[in-house]
Length: 91
Length: 443
Image 1 (cartoon, chains in turn orange, cyan):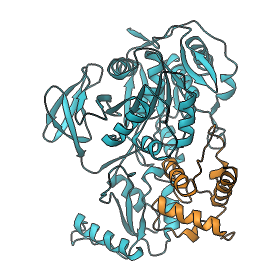
Image 2 (tube, helix red, strand yellow; image 1 turned 60 degrees about the vertical axis):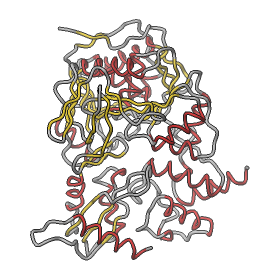
Image 3 (cartoon, rainbow over the protein chains, first blue to last red; image 1 turned 180 degrees about the vertical axis):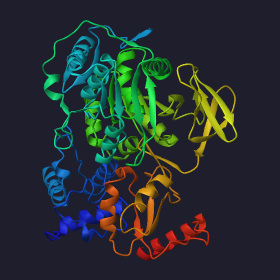
Image 4 (cartoon, one colour; image 1 turned 45 degrees about the horizontal axis):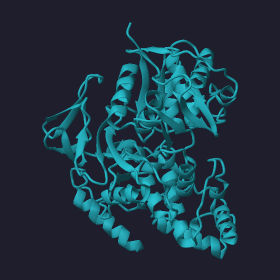
């Protein structure tokens, strides 16, 4: 593991595991810097859709990909957690 | 030689809106001809474009050369390699910068900003092979579904007569252009009916709704049950719409009814398969029975139903078990055998399990569909694997290189052995018992 999860990141990791039924994966085992989507955790675009729903319910923020290129927020757990905090700060 | 038009729109009619810019028929044909000039005659093209305009231009340019499109179900390198082995003369066209992977890839982006308009209306030979569609969700040997231009042309006319807009309508789609549902509704439909499609393919609920809000009136959404459920539950108000189309899996009736109440749209569910295209429809909020399109006939042999139509090469067996009633009405009872269909991609349990067993270090294992009790949750497969020297993370990585993400089993659980009988068979009840046991362990 390259970096330790912050409390916010851990909470988000738990939401990811729960929302996407990743029962065989411990929330702690999600590397904050590894890509969430693609081969590492086997998550696809349908998971991304499910995850945005769970995040909107838990955090009250709406994630957008905008023009389809701006997917940096989904790069890894750390980026996603930071992006959610940013959106919460704005509202 | 009988030919059929590539398009039935007038030259100033809009087909697409790409990055905010309207694309008229003459602009579109100009782009297709410009790309066709760069391709050899009778080109076989592996069309990997993701942007809808790039995909459509590549699709039609290939037809203009006298050639055909190869449409893989996924972009796994192993799948593309297999396609190239079968069609060694094929050109890869991609709108992504993946030249590292495929040295022959033609970059289409520059071309889209350069070509001049053309008033021409190309004709395509009716019997010309136009597309070869692959539906497999694994890197294993894929079955090919061949479509002549006559089949795609007639299907499009039938589809638009059955469910297409009668007056100018502006569409947004959440489905990719490669699969049959996306191909028929987002690539071919604008060539045959007064439909202007947005090139964007928004992914998340908030993006889809923002896209719908920007759509000119009357608006249509072309989607799937997974996306439509997310739209309902995301908490953002939906704009007024004229039509919502759904396919790839049956849409839940109460979801359809809520969508209808919130948007005022007619919610139309469409049933079909890659071999036959769209074959039936229903008003999802009000009807339980599907209505077979007029151009099709339904026949039964044993427990299998077949559809046939003049534009198809022969009768086509349906993957679903049907209960038929009068005048082409029917209900779906479930899938035949071990076939699985997720997000418009198909795989068989046997094929997926074989991919698992091919991984070095895997001694035994099975991928299967666990029983689900909740309607409308996303279908996921499960796996029980005997691989004493491997971790689930290693296994998942290995599988990810062989199986489309939609089919990756979850949960994937390591076990000491599988409850096989003396003859080596794996009884379903014993498998589910073990599965229940290992699930309890972690709950």
